[in-house]
Image: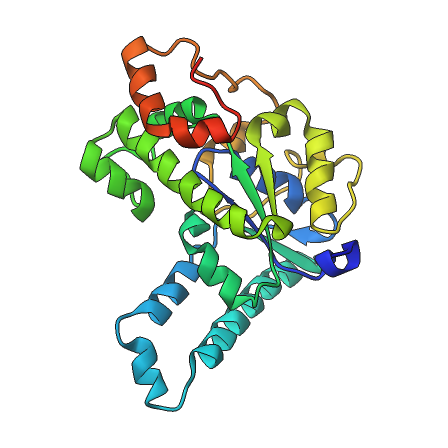
Length: 273
């Protein structure tokens, strides 16, 4: 697939919460051709409608096929995203919604396999620590259905967030293995340590060119607020201060988390120490 073909495809940024998806969104959102809105969430509702028990059977009785339904939901999604891009004066949209890790096959079917995915990952220890520190993922404040499932079962603990991390990246890994030509794995650590090289690779993957100055503009130009990382609003530059790894973790918690995430994390190049 050449650059011109890739340039015409939808793009989804997928990853675990607190893995840098908002940072990447801010960078790409200032590209002159790209509009990247806050987390859209609504595709989960489209999938729920299609997957509702007996929904397709009921539609079939009205002579509406699954293919027709998927065409309609794709049209709704495309119109919604394109409308947003046009409102920003951009010709192309990119979605970043971590929750869509659970909807990758649905999204792929919806867009007839004509779609690209940037799969973002982060060291599990840093992701777990960030999830546990977030004010949005406490038992009193949590609203995200995917994260709350693990917090409700395991409490506000490193174990809960380790199990969530493993669940997300297991799903992403399975999809990546099936579609390696349309997926790009990106590490958060590479993005913050080598932002020009990593951003250039991402843009080339989606058929776009790197534009000088976008790494700085990401923090000076306005962005539409919505679902996303709240901390980035007080960030003024890309830095690697939050790349810590397992150093400083109590031995018992480090071992507990690695026992949970190790099989997946090691395949992604992360280590327990």
